Amino acid sequence: MQPVTDTPEENVKEVVVIGGGPAGLTAAHELARTKILPLVLEKSDQLGGIARTAKYKGNRLDIGGHRFFTKIPEVERFWRDVLGEEFLRVPRKSRIFYQGRFFEYPLVAMNAFINLGPIESLRIFLSCLRWKAFPYAQEETFEEYVTNRFGKRLYLTFFKTYTEKVWGIPCNQIRADWAAQRIRGLSLKTAVLNALTGRGEAKTLIKEFDYPRLGPGMLWEKCGEFVEQHGGQVQMQAETIRLELDGQRVGRVVYRQNGETRTVATSHVLSSMPLNELIACLSPSPPEEVLAAARGLSYRDFLIVGLFVDQEKLFPDNWLYVHTPGVRVGRIQNFGNWSAAMVAKTGQSGLGMEYFCSRGDDLWEMPDAELIALATKELGILKLADTAKVQDGVVVRQEKAYPVYDGEYRHQVDIIKKYLGTIENLQTIGRNGLHRYNNQDHSMLTAFLAVRNILGEKHDLWDVNTERSYHEDFQTDKKVPESMHSLIEGDHKSDGKLSKQGKTGIQAKPSI
View 1 (cartoon, one colour):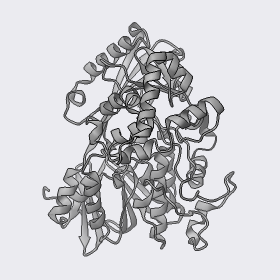
View 2 (view 1 turned 180 degrees about the horizontal axis):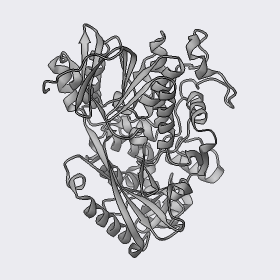
View 3 (view 1 turned 180 degrees about the vertical axis):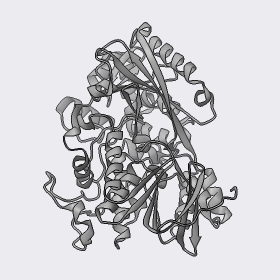
View 4 (view 1 turned 135 degrees about the vertical axis):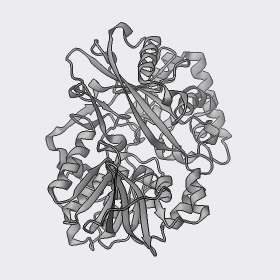
């Protein structure tokens, strides 16, 4: 690390929150409600992290598409307290686009039968029976997990190509943990029962969801305003460069902003920054084993090409999964179908052409003009719009959008987790803070619990959204600190309890 010259220490902050995404801002919001003044350090110029809303000429782009649906009462109440009537109720429709045909997602038996034809449908059905009778003995990889539930032929048709496009590695190198989090509870049997009878509660089968009128970033911008209105601070373009340890505690946080290096003393740190970056910031440095584990963690980056087309109602979906060979686009958002306010011009459609990539590869390094031309060309290949009516475009890049579940990640995270457990006043929260592919509400739940830990309770944040689900009865603890009553009081439609084990899981966002 290059030497830095520190300015004099500022006033001590009770809590420094690293990262202004969903986890960080939820934590800061709840700290401010308990009269603890947080300092939020966000290295970019916009709040929300991957859940921010990019803005371009009056248009808005949701970075990845964020459905607001949860079974966690505290999260639901938080959303509504912050946004109130700015929440819209949106019908959910997403389909797979494959070989020029639209397949319902999750798969619907009759729709798939018609699109695939009777011969291929029979082959898929027989393949499913074969793998149900003789499954893989162990499910260690994504390929094994999906094949055991759907059969090899359906896996090859609807999972393999798309998933490898997203992650950039073979499915037999992706851990089954990822599938367990994202599609747990969904099986061919469940999908068919749901299609034929309306029964079945697979996590991906919701019919509608809530959505902020101006995109998810609207929520997080309001959270930032709340924090500052209640005495906290939100520092933008403030990059954390060092956490100085005094024994087994973080004594000071050093950050750089506008070319100036500043140091702030703290009693607690909540970090949502990627684990590999956090470990590199610790001073003195952790043992080499921990540093090596951090260097071994992988991430997948992401970019979205916004195209603005002088056509309305191109397709009814919120988003499409693109399985068609020969194009690199992985998913297409139709922002006007999330909220009409996302598109500035009446009679125009705003599309988000999503490309999964890695920093430094050809897609990531491609100039914006070439990316816009590529996205326009692929839109034409797919015949989803008249490319002559594409009027404008913009590119938004997102680093470290997705923690990768490769063959070594679990071992590496265990090493890091054990080491971080020795630092008494440092907690990691959120998707990248735990290197876990959390949905937005699970990231928020880690923030709620981290604040409760600061107030004297004991919750294992690493246990949120694991394969066995988080089993804490979140609201029924009679020893909830007085300062946290704001989290759990008020009129709510739920029974006031966080669901027990097996029912904590939210509607899994089927998008990657």
